[in-house]
Length: 329
Image (cartoon, rainbow, N blue to C red):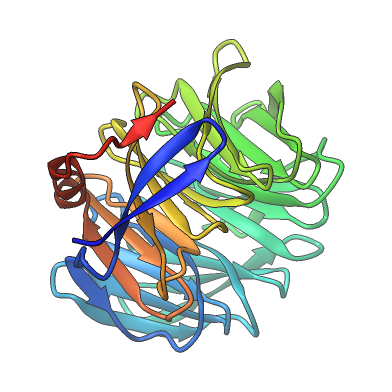
């Protein structure tokens, strides 16, 4: 196993060459750079979007495509699977949210969206609402079954990149180019907290399983961990240089994965805040990552047009077997 040493201010990390760490599964079907990946709640399906507007839904166990959609005219900015895994929602730079019936493979004749590009999507935990993040500086809440806009959340002063609902359904978060994270009550549509600390735009966020803590990342390269009850910063995680594109927390909340423009994917022990393994992207290009909710499997997608499913336990085991230090502060 080939080992490389990566040095950042205050931290030295041991990197595993991916030529020596084999992916559990490789899913081939896209013909352009992968822009987003997401698992269904039961982990049986994976949806992926690419920069040429194509979305694919995969059967994870069978390792095959179920559906391929020419969804948008260019980059798919976000994809979200409904809690029952019966509907896929996609968005793009065409300002439209499209819905796809996964029992028939056909588009549902319902459309909604923002006034400008839709940058992010999320189903509420009960599946009744879709939240959309827009380049029009707003977050919109849609009763998608009835094609009805039920909320327009304002307060951001620039494009909104990301939205997410907590598992308990009581919290909605949004973040974007104004470097601010807003914490909303999705029922009352009221702003609960404003989280300030990022010095560049916010790119991605992830809730812990108990819905009490939020992890965020952005262009400044610093991962921030927030107490959502108090609306306060708990700590920061620093290892990347520059934009942290994507975050994913394991289903048990013990492992945080982060992918950066610096070409690295870090696996963190979330409790201690220490990096346990670092993978260098090589030709893979970690553009988007997602954790299977009920399995120790991480999906990655990037420049080579493929989706890779990694056994995280195996990566950590190989990393731990090397006797060199994994993290020195």
